[in-house]
Length: 269
Image (cartoon, rainbow, N blue to C red; front, side, top):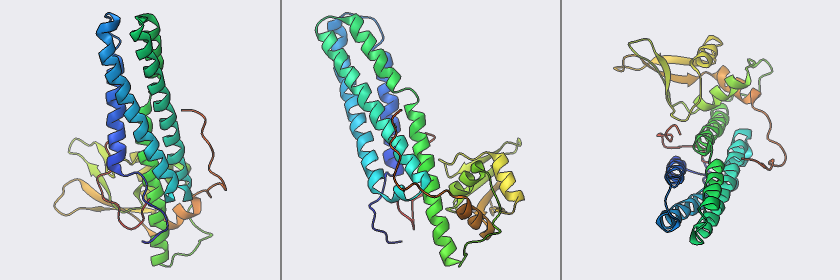
């Protein structure tokens, strides 16, 4: 599908940011060990450099998301807002780490420890927030896929569209791309196997199936696995329930599972 927007953050870029965040956090934790200032200085410089690279990566992904079509849906705007939080948090952590290097260079381990603790606090929940970015972008993609499918199948607005909760709307958006797989293990555990960044409870899937908004079709030769596909009613329910995007993106002021393995086709971010 042709569109005037450049592509937004890829799954691989989000996964790389998650790794950077985890590695930076581990390095900050390692710096808590006691030692003389000269002994700790080299490690502090290395950690500061890692945090600087992490902040640059987060800023690049924020820019890519802000320039992409993510700003055309509420879920996409949510991803932009979350990335802004990550960019702010990683930048603040990098600054505190730089200050700690200056403190260690002057032999002040007490101040250095306090600054490193502040840097660690800025990264609190950052990897989880990165996962939430992926989930929001998945829903954004799903909404665009639903629009494209509605156009192909000539599904006009329906005043009788089934009403869904916000959790069910998010579930429909996460599964709208048609690459969902539901798994029932031999021991009775039921789980959404893909897409990997989808945060959809099994109870939500059951509720959507009961409303005939999606179907579960057993996959040939794959015992216990079923393909998930939204019905026409599910597409209409999703589009009817999706809130209109605000006229201007809200500016956030505060602060993975693994990346989606499926290649994006059709709608780009």
